[in-house]
Length: 151
Image 1 (tube, rainbow, N blue to C red):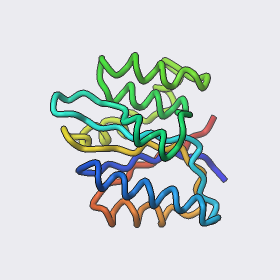
Image 2: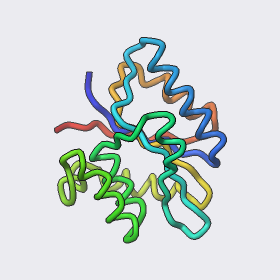
Image 3: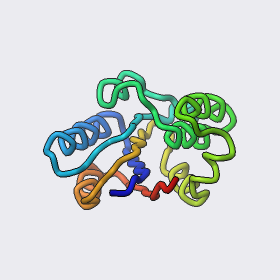
Image 4: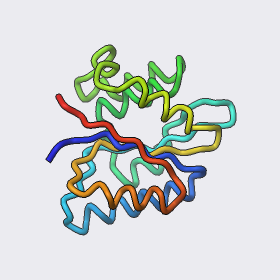
């Protein structure tokens, strides 16, 4: 089963929390869906991307993968680059290597969806049935972005 980056964007925190709970339920339903790492971020009114540690840790613990951390850095602009790469570097992949893994068009598309107040779930997953994730995200009025991760 291949690993994939899944980013789901939502209009507010409440909806993102409900979607995160649904994703977590998929893991416990033994359908083969496995979240390797995950983080919840919010774009605040000033345009700063903030990691919502309270929600991230309650759903996925403290482990944030390299690609996830790198994407946070790329989406967060200049202020987010250092924070994102610091988060991602702990997993052994940083700097240019993260940029090489992530598709530039994908990061631009995600960026355009993360308006002030919006929330994103950034997940590194193993997923045999992508339709369940699509249904959850679309059911909550969100948008989903995907990219295969090949190391």
